[in-house]
Image (cartoon, rainbow, N blue to C red; front, side):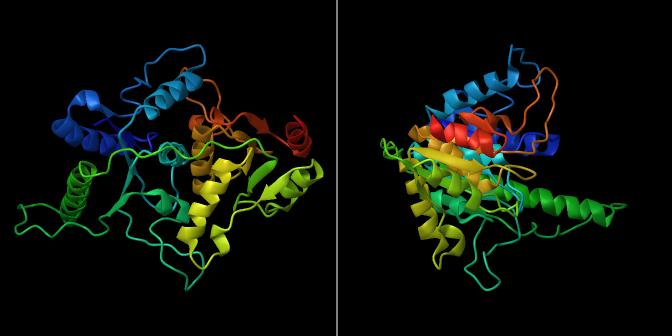
Amino acid sequence: MSIYVAHRLFAAHDRALAAALAERLAAKVGTERVFLPFCDTDEEDLVAEVKGRRLFELDRERLGRLDAMIALLHGPSLDDGVCMEIGYAAASGIPVLLLTTDFQTYSLTEDGALLDFPDPLIQAVANRIIRVPRLGPPSSSQQQGATHYAEFLSRNLSQVRAALDTAVEAALELPAPGPRSTPHSENSLVYVEASPYTASGHDHLARACRDAGHQVALPRRFTATDPIADALHDLTTACGASRLLADVSGPETPPGTALLIGAALASGVRIGAFHPRPTYTHASGREPNWRNLMIQYAVHAHLDGMEAVQAWLAT
């Protein structure tokens, strides 16, 4: 059983949490059957001509030979690289387990159905979700001189240990990989995914597609009475389209959009990322990236304005 640990990896505490999970998994299935990005790609010390692209290639190569994925997702702002990896795995028929210690749930309207994550697509593709939202129990005895902060730390660490142990046991019970999603057909359908972080919505992108002679599909999950069912419809539609035109604007690529990008890549769909006002990230030895490298190198075109969109649609 080969298991991929998808995790946010920019801060030490995120990497430490993922490493604790990987260590527990390795004790069950062997070190050679666990893949931990950053650690197993030697990201800090890797030297490559285009380091970001090389890291993407290493991660994608491992995504292509998995038996299962565990993804760590915490809080309302979900890592777009992790969401892309979830989408790639789901479209490849790989069972996905999601682990969260978030104490919040989400809904698309004030009194709408409660969701485990802000975008119903994340929940829709999961084979299993492990939620451990509460602190561990208070300790029965407190060390002399210890502050209430030490007690609070102990209860948080207890919560983390319980979450990791539960996830490992659940991962070992995941089903075998299933069939890949049906490859896209050669058609004129463009699936258009807007960004919730912009006021323009999807009208301008959909109009450009229609003006270029393409059919257009738009997401249904955000206005659906059954957001999970319609999220799966969105996923199927995007993976069966000829192109995915995704607005990736925002602090990070929106989580559902990132998932669709991963799924589209696994399904052979051409992907254009509309991002007219990028900001860049920088890391030692790595080229500047205008989005998370798992997004930047997954897409086939960076579209920095409507003229670029029109040119891409014409090819």
